[in-house]
Length: 347
Image (cartoon, rainbow, N blue to C red; front, side):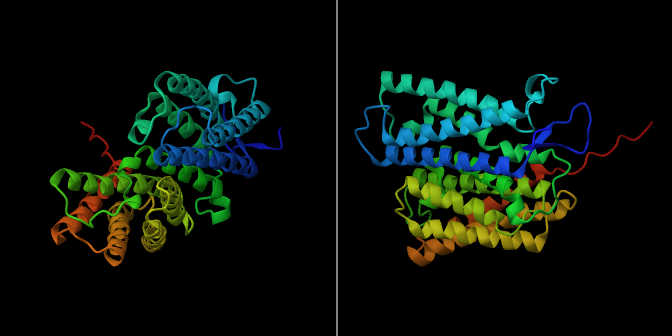
């Protein structure tokens, strides 16, 4: 058996090999290169005018990150593939879909070059809606989520891992979260100052929507990890901080105070999770976390806005925005961990 892989304890016909912690760590390290390349390219699309070619330094960073990540994923999959198996089951846990992600990304990259040749270089919102870019996002999601998906189904996973042990899973979840947040960049609250000025109704609705979209994007991975593990302190701060830092980079750090607010909010959420101890075995606490985490997150957010810029919204509007975030968080927690379905009564 390969030194980079190990069999899961349940040696059944459907079990899959699980690669080592080091292999997963390299996967997320290279995945970070890939995602940072996306952020750098996003910065160029947002801040530079007159981009007229596919062959830019920003694309070089992005696509070199893909080539390095793809080479590692394919080499790992080939080295640990079990020839007696067919399809995705032949590859180590999580890495079958990563191979699919490499293919999807490669197709999207070829299509992206063709698209740019025919229609030019997209700017701002257009870059987030380009069909070839969306294909790249799908391929990246399949690649970046590999350690998270592999660990999820492994019965040997520690229920309450330390931060270092949990790092490949946490970074995997964080990278996917940043990817989704990047795709919804036009609704990214932590690169805006929501609540400073009372605009017309349409602009107000867009700012409120930014809070609610960001709320769900940040809350979903936190609840997902809590449903499967008892994550170590610093989990939420890592996710929140990465979203703030990397999306802030796309915006050239015009609002550094909001990046700091994202980190502080993440630390506060870690404190709430430590206090509540939510888990799948304690659904009441899990649902409570779904409501309380948004309360803490957006209280910190609006406090930062108030201290640095001053809040121009009415009390009803900003408190109502936080309340809606709590209600949506509660709804999301109920969807992720619904009450048990009663057994049918025998007749």
